[in-house]
Image (cartoon, rainbow, N blue to C red):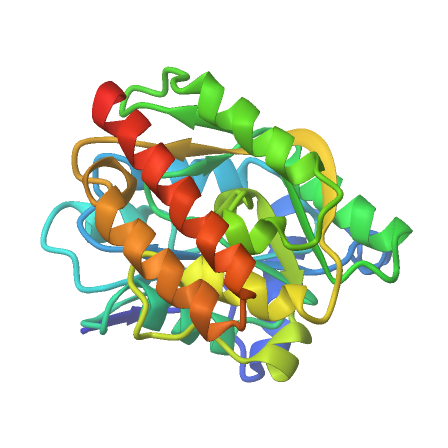
Length: 288
């Protein structure tokens, strides 16, 4: 087990650390930090050495004045730990065996101190200006509890692909029917940010889910609060040969249906969910 919090700032109180680190790194004063809502970003990781450095750089290069960044690595055996060591003074990271992605994220969330949280997988990355857009939105919209935006879908080389999927999700997101989310998960996970207080109301990620952990959390929040959206693309979602979305979509759709049932979707919504999954599966067979 490797456990590294910081090599730069000596601290005894966890809640003070990120503010201290931000001041050290960016040379900003406390007034500027206090005028920005605090955002905690969690990156779960396991053997993603080919991509994780781009993920890390995309977060740190945001230059967001009140950022807390935590990487929860599952004991990688590739070069991930060597990469993390390079950034030890700029983020918190832990490398130890875990029980999967949802367990890693939950551990990070319990460490986090931000008013807003998000998780960014170790093969995805943020687009420039994302955190400032998110922070500004929450400051200007006090009643907003969670927020999602557009995204790009890219391949392992960062080339944009599947633009029709992106467009289709944008259409679903614009529909006025509240039941739409029970029919299809149109929320882009890496482009979604939530108030941390929601975890006390709806709970953390269910660790029994491995492909649709985000969808389950979205539905639990959706029962209580409307989803806020912005049209700007906030992240890049990567599809590659080893990614879940590339080769496990049939299992994913099965788990999605289970999640919809667990979250009390109506019989009509469940029927439409099945039909939607069937049609999407046929399309995926043609393009994958």
